[in-house]
Amino acid sequence: MLVKIKRGWELPESAVTPQSVYLNRRRFLQGAGSVAAGAMVAGGLPARARAYAPEDDPTADLYPVDRNTRYTVERPLTSYEDAATYNNFYEFGSHKQIWRAAQDLPIRPWTVTFDGLVEEERTVDIDTLIRAMPLEERVYRLRCVEAWSMVIPWSGFPMAELVNYARPLGSARYIRMQTFGADEFPEAPGLRQFWYPWPYIEGLTIEEATNELAFMVTGLYGAPVPRQNGAPLRLHTPWKYGFKSVKSIVRFTFTEERPVSFWEEIQGSEYGFWANVNPEVPHPRWSQATERVIGTDERIPTQLYNGYAEFVAGLYEGMEGERLFM
Ligand SMILES: Nc1nc2c(c(=O)[nH]1)N[C@H]1C(S)=C(S)[C@@H](COP(=O)(O)O)O[C@H]1N2
Ligand SMILES: [Mo]
Image 1: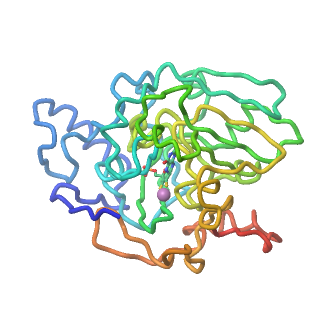
Image 2 (image 1 turned 90 degrees about the vertical axis):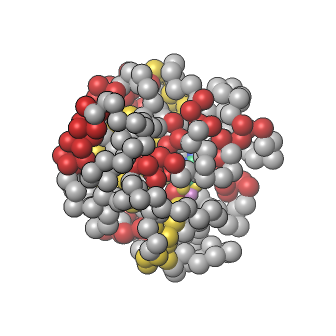
């Protein structure tokens, strides 16, 4: 794993920083148009404060959206810079510095297909979908299975809204989600690594997908979500390891059978279907007891369900026979 040397201007914002403060800073920074990219400014955010949001994103007018304060994290926010330049997105390479390569991803036109056990299969234009959804901002933790973490202000809408929109049949038990692949963008460099079972697939039960925490992400830090973070639509399930939070989704398939995910197919002994965060269940090759906080020199204890037990523990009652934490 690469060690990132922190630069002076990548100061984390305080978790108590209200949304209005970083938004005002951002407006100030946009106004300071002649400031050179990357220049240091008072307040800790780089002058490129919005630089990672896709240019000409047709939904840009929707942001910023109001923060839902029901979800709080007692930790400082990760800097926008770190969240947008330290990524996992294997379609663009199996290392953390994929953000430049990801700029080639064409995010318009983009369609999302709902199929399988639904009243009616359909394909919708991403802008139609986003504009039909109630957008809000949520500050959520992100805990990667590699034992690092971030705290990010995500914009988007509850996945329950998307499930309603899809109109699944009563027989549907799981949702299989699929990232773009060779059909949509064969130029993505990672797709040439033919030993991976592309496209990237993840899955949730309907109960998980309609839990209030499950969130469809369309924005980051008060602007449209950067390509490297999964534009134009990705999942974030904050109580699960990050690999469940599939990026740049093109298809939602409702099924009766449990989908096999990308990582499960590659190494089922290390990455399972449930992948709920638990500090007491080690990965076969490393401990999950603590996590490295990106942008700091700190390691902090990892929490059961990544700190979200009150919201999600009930989903798994009576399922002790399952490998819930791997
Ligand atoms: N399509 C796709 N989605 C993906 C990945 C990926 O490689 N491809 N990586 C996952 C992993 S391992 C993590 S930790 C998160 C990282 O999200 P971030 O880069 O926005 O922090 O995305 C997840 N979603
Ligand atoms: Mo991850």
